[in-house]
Figure 1 (cartoon, chains in turn orange, purple):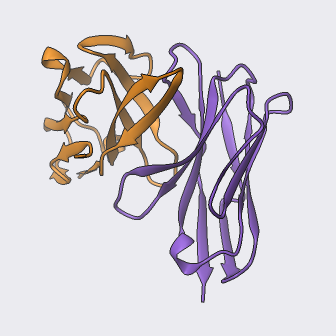
Figure 2 (figure 1 turned 90 degrees about the vertical axis):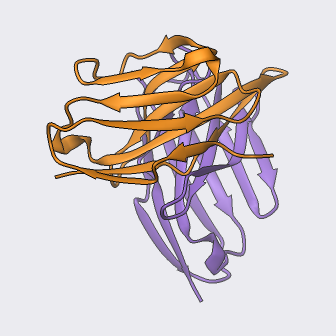
Figure 3 (figure 1 turned 180 degrees about the vertical axis):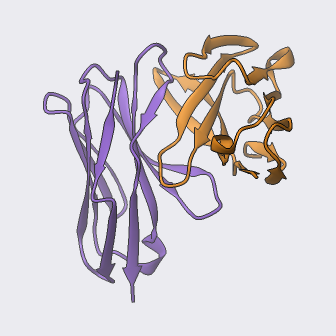
Length: 115
Length: 113
């Protein structure tokens, strides 16, 4: 079974530039998550999708971050314009619920460095 | 707002030692608690998931316990091996949506031969 795919794996940009990340979840997983993991910290949820609808985006900085999940499959996360403090690893995860249990499967992440 | 704290931040042990990692959370209204492993440059791998109605889960040399009332969980690793070296993250599920996870900052474990 293929895992969660993310691209690119690494990205270096200058502040005020734009950047986009892509995620392809595990086939059949209805729920998709984007997390931000700053060095030395645990991941922080940015946005959660159920199919192509947003369930929770309370911690997404909406003035610069946006995300979409077209057709309830792939998802993109965009930052425009980027700031130095956006340097982090961006993790995508997908999950399905079975008999009340839910396990999230994580992709390898995209490591972003903003100079 | 849920807050998750992990102690210690880092741990270095010789091979073969048994060890305990600690996790505490502030809001006991959780759906579940998970322990993840993260290797450098890699994503997270789920190790154990404990539902809120359960008290412990075991997988091989790993045992995780949950005490909801006191807001604590422990991950016990028996007979540690160098391959166990990684960052271990505790995450509690709950809040505004079923699947939402709140993570601790992790414990960096080094097992030296």
